[in-house]
Image (cartoon, rainbow, N blue to C red):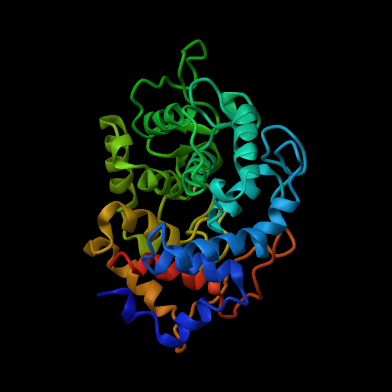
Length: 336
């Protein structure tokens, strides 16, 4: 299989329409195998940073490098620093095209990163949780932001998955321990009634999938293996992962959306596993087929989940063909 089997000439022209510079840049960047020094990509990226969604978000940033209010940046949802950086990353924004992004990333780390590498929703390490840790590390990599402190943060994330060197939350004097949010190994989460959380797992594994190979230590590779085993512990298409408070999986698993914050869909599970080399694994087959089946007769995917009126940008009407979701879906299928 190849991407050409899923993207028609009409869909390609729709995605690359330069009257929509944000989407056309993201499509070029993610789907069409253009080299970083390709002049078409460089021009498209430059225009996208000066217009469209990236510009809107950057123009809302405080000159000191934060959105809404200074500090750890988790609240208010979904317009504070955490969500702005995640959204910028998903739009393909780059530090090299707007140095304000680097200022924002540095300020965010100064406010939210603990000495042992936990990214916190409130400052102290007790605010650590898988979905936030994975989301932010994934976003930093996508933004091309570099900081030596991120190595420690990836190490903590790996230890939090495997449990290696991490004490239980009851051992309050331990130098490295779990907390009420990040409660135990294998993605155990206080917000999921202390059970493993697949939403968090998807974010963690997506971040690991983007980490350069030379950065993948034995500890990190062990964490990746544990994560892959967890995501494949069921048929991902069923989304029948542990549910702390409900008798059945959240319906949001099957609603493909843009952007993707802490609520996760099957597209993100598939992207995480595909990037790690499992796109053609038979265990992912039903999920891939589900993605393909959602493509309409014109080769497009609908927006089924969104944050309209809650974030900086609205990305089109629900239940209508969406360039953003189509790019996400094709970005998974290209790994086939």
